Length: 228
Image 1 (tube, rainbow, N blue to C red):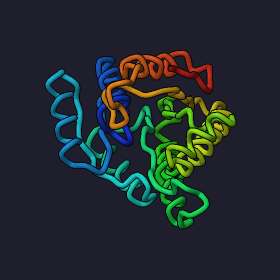
Image 2: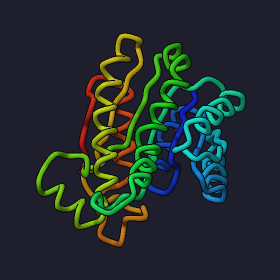
Image 3: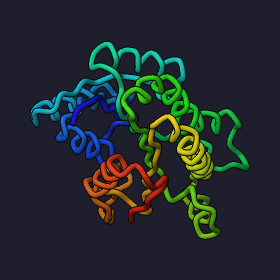
């Protein structure tokens, strides 16, 4: 198995595990994010594991920057086979007081950047019969208890953006299936070990999530699966 996977929103935890899982299968890995040092360390670690990897700094909420980044990935690593979107935005924690511009910022990373990436990568994805794999979150769920948590955590903007992203995955899955492109989401219902949200009580292993993503890529059936 070979190809190029773009890991958008790279950091410790899910995205690093996904990069390693696909890298072990022969994929070249493009690590994408805003922090140069983190990207450099991540790509160096993957190279030490005999995985071809390169860092690409990019603001994934800037659609023009996303398109430019994908052009650099193609030039450096080759056509894109898999797009993994792990990026999410912060801000607009309280929808009753936050400026609308803050919510736009959250949506830019979580939804608009994703759609720009899909549109730009689509010719490659169609040719490769590739995939778009999205990290979803439990805050996207329509339930009173979830709404209460999002409000208490001051994460209302993220909950709204994740709900929009969840819908976008379903729509893209339906639209692109006829073109041979698979679109799917792993919804994470809990805290993931090794991430910024882990204060010592996280229970979900990043490698388990990465295995779910690889299973989706292989099976190409379910639009959504959950873990947690």
